[in-house]
Amino acid sequence: IEKANKVNIKPVIAETVSADAKVVTDGFGAYRGLDKLHQAHHVLNKEKEEYVKGEYHTNTLEGFWTLLKRGIYGQYHKVSSEHLQAYLDEFTFKYNNRTNKSNFALLIQRSLTFV
Image 1 (tube, rainbow, N blue to C red):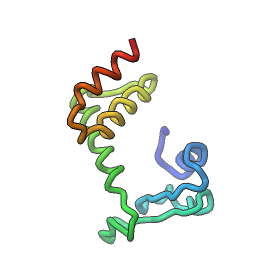
Image 2 (image 1 turned 45 degrees about the horizontal axis):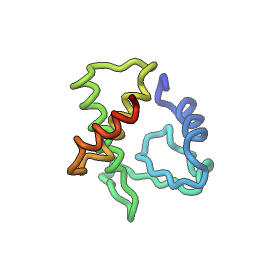
Image 3 (image 1 turned 90 degrees about the vertical axis):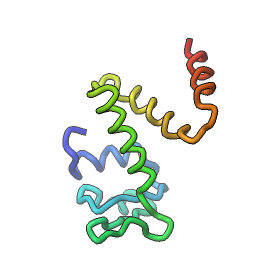
Image 4 (image 1 turned 180 degrees about the vertical axis):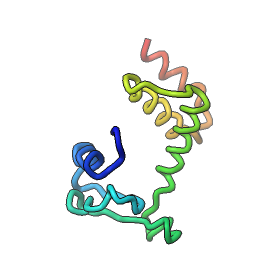
């Protein structure tokens, strides 16, 4: 997405997120109207220090973004759009397995399946 605005963001969300999904966002203006595209759209107003609303929060996503940004800036310094999916796959794997005690063995096992 070249620019994070409603015109660019909404079509991507409509194409990639199931219409029956529960969508939880912050109050960023580009997300307004998602309730018309999805079964449920819950908005957290962080300007009013609303970080949790019942069962809804954005903590998991924010934790993932923190890991991703730190990894890209600290490890790779920059990424190309050509290989962006590979970077996302790597950090998704790392995030989803961050508490796995046998990460090294799992990593070796999965890397051997790609040979």
